[in-house]
Image 1 (cartoon, rainbow, N blue to C red):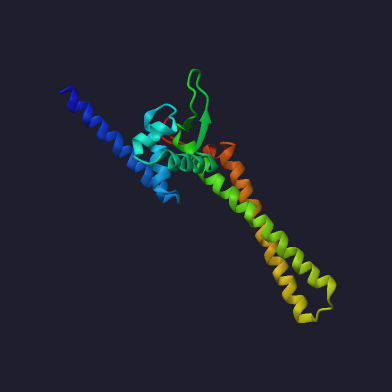
Image 2 (cartoon, rainbow, N blue to C red):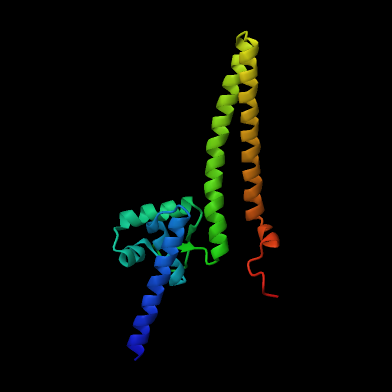
Length: 182
């Protein structure tokens, strides 16, 4: 009876892992990253690349890449444990924090890419205005494009404030984790 119960619990754990992978995929993250996140999460303690390779059937090299991707997304970290010589990897045990980390890291990447883009275009447009005599129609078009860039800058500044809103935890004052719990 204990073996059957243990087997049933293991099946439920695997279902949780697959649901976590599926959810992560819905957020634009590969199912492999989601599955590894789920494995570490359900394990309840840090794991080595060897352990992860064993659980997934993937090579240690592939696991290293997946864990690196997870660290880039800020949803996993390397941790130290006394007496353990191999690198250990841990994931956040709080679903909400994982969500925040995942989205804010992606938003930060978008902001970084955008800042370079907007500076390049703004510089090009300003050079056109200064270096060449432009007719009235061209001036109107230049101004419209510059206005669009300023809108773009405002938009990415808003995303930066949104990141800060999430990372500070202020989001939970407006959208509580447990609205019906007192």
